[in-house]
Image 1: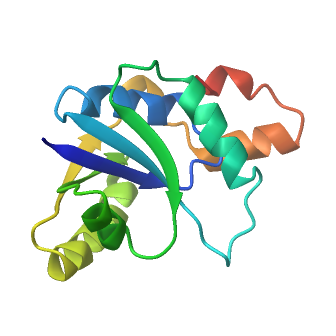
Image 2: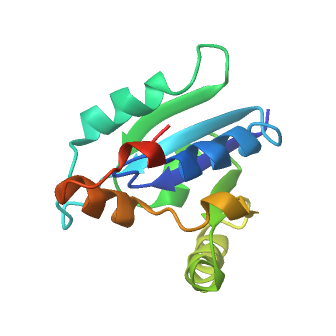
Length: 146
């Protein structure tokens, strides 16, 4: 079984994230949306709320799991028997950042492969940071959420 982990803070989970998961499901038997918990960051939404909201976006038989984790993503992958990490790439800056992380992960766990999926062009300008700013400042953020 091909299991992929899609890690992130997902604060909030956007239509861009959902698009990456839907496309990853065409490549993998199961996708685990893994919400990384970082004690140094103060998220806008609590982890439990993010998990419950994301679960609502996927139906029962879609082979999607949602859970949180602490520590290294490769350690979480090993725990879940996942041999792939999925990352969405919006632009060149994302690629450079994600490439660095993928190389470190490959050094730590060569059996886990990172797969980059280019964001759909019409969604490439959407980020959780922008959606959070819209939310905090009374802007129309809902159209960027699934």
